[in-house]
Length: 452
Image (spheres, rainbow, N blue to C red):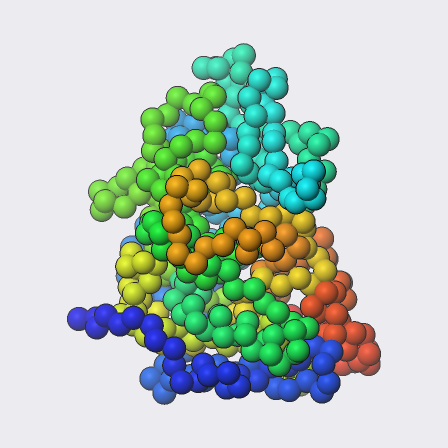
């Protein structure tokens, strides 16, 4: 029997309980150290395709099979889409990891200077796709059933804000979902206080689609657009593969579409594919470190320097999940024992920051929450807060970074050194401190990162 508990801020959340590595504000204090309850245990890590204990291994394997399944038009793929399988965008080194895949997002500024979602004409200009920033790379027609239809999205000259975004790692995200909102909020507060505002992570309340009216602090996606893995999954099924679900019942376009809605498959256990996606991710193990490299003197020295110059202000080493039995996502979920009070090491704060690499894109609300988002009164959801995300990106968690050949949100940095020196804005102080290190100390930090 799991005892149900709602999250209450722990005593360590009082201001001043955290210490941060300040960037460019005097001598850097120690990095954030989240106190670990004596009953907490280390979360399992690895790339072995085994469950973390949330489900049994056979269920996890069945969920992975659904995650890996290649979809076709007859299954409901499209009409607009980017990929035929979840694994296509999350596959390195195994299902659920990151990949080299990027997606295109565009928009423009309105007469008032504010960001506007894109207007993409399709069907020879007779139909306009609006309310999104994502531009799908693929379409299912023309085909045998619709030989004279043409719906491929192409960027018009008017959409002159353009960016690529790399697909994200999903391994270990069940742990991330189980982190209490107050933990992330407090990290943001202390960042601002201890750095005198130089570092100011934004904790953004976002809708939980399976619990209308309920919000949580976002943590999934480059703009922190989702806090629930089920909401994230439904978003991906519609916008990346063109599958409608009970949370997103309407296609982006009905042109060339012959499938009934919703068109995701419901299985004998009563779960639809997008629900299996969420269950699969919740049961994945956290990315494992390269323990051989991590034990070398160079990497250990680099670990100390990583803290000393202030990287750990945003790339927070360790987080801890809330207790088993804690209610999540407006009552839709409860933290199971396998995820309750677990420590894990993402090297990220899951907050939004302006580090000088922002892509100018504001999160498109109809795209991520459906057009009905405007008909629901969402607790603590602020359109103005969403608007302030234009040049902010979520801190990239560094677990598993050694497995990524292309770095940063746009995959434009090809070496770890390139990524470090590219940091500006809130991270200017850290970047300057890195530049003042000796070459051997810089190499030590890079060796440390190569062990993550």
